Image (cartoon, rainbow, N blue to C red; front, side, top):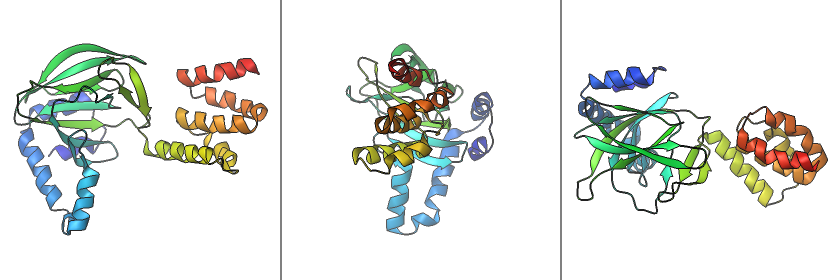
Length: 257
């Protein structure tokens, strides 16, 4: 069963070859049947909570199975509104077809801009590997075509962020931390900073050592506002993260000092 494909750290190429030998529609149907047999589906309240945790109505995605290595999901390849943004997928993804082939539009990811690449057809014998660090994809279909069900195996990279691009200009407009702990720490720092909590700098002193550049930078900003001279002692620490964007933010502060 396809569950074993995310039980170990298999190369994406191996997973793609395994997919070619399997009836993926039958495999996915089996995963769906197992979902309904979960104890959390026994009562209406817990069933609703489970469904909400598994589904994303904005992307039309349903999570079928996950491990600490990756997850297996299905989505509907529907047309998106011109105002809806494009999101990168951190890590490696293997797209596979179910009941019928589908097309995707590929983009090359530059730091602050997408570049349209090509259209690719995914069918039962041709799963597609997407390297999220270099490529962004979007489902494409004819306007009158019925919604197509698609499959995807994601091999997660929690150290990478989710980049958000405008669908028309293809320019980067935002980013989101992929790592849940980084997101929690970032929100906590933002709240402490907004409330001007007197203990905020103490928390920032701990989180300036965080491996995620956004968390470390926010913590540094709070320390800098409290005591610029002392905060500059943390610059060598932040530079060890080797993040170009963070280095650019630190540069004018170093020069001013």
